[in-house]
Length: 203
Image (tube, rainbow, N blue to C red):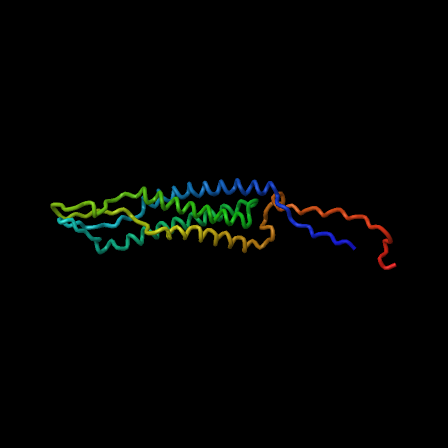
């Protein structure tokens, strides 16, 4: 008796094209959203007030030390909103649901957060107290908000992939509700070869 191979799923060319297109759309949208995050952060992040002595020495005012933390917290909160929004929007794009879409969400949010970080630090304004130098009287200046190192951008993609994974688990369906047009196509079984000789193997 001849055994035939088990049919396997073959990639759907329409689905592959859709993933490329959706990836480009999501990544470009995430970068554009990152620019918007940067603009919002640069407008609402608080400056840290410094006093500058007549001899040019300076120091932060006692009540202003929390502003650096507030700047980072505001940036992270904007990233949370963006990450949840992107993950939810991609999930509602039913034809793209799956592991590939999860990777697209992660990369897109990483790009968006990096864009927000780079553009935001360029948009903020303020006065570096070290640049004031000696003056005739003590003065108070507002330094530009800061974000510290790049670790602050990890929040957005991490939360986005967590939200998307939760939606996948919550859905619970093997096909995740994708339209059948975009499902992988089953490979056709090879035609059975005609048997020769006695058709009854037990005779």
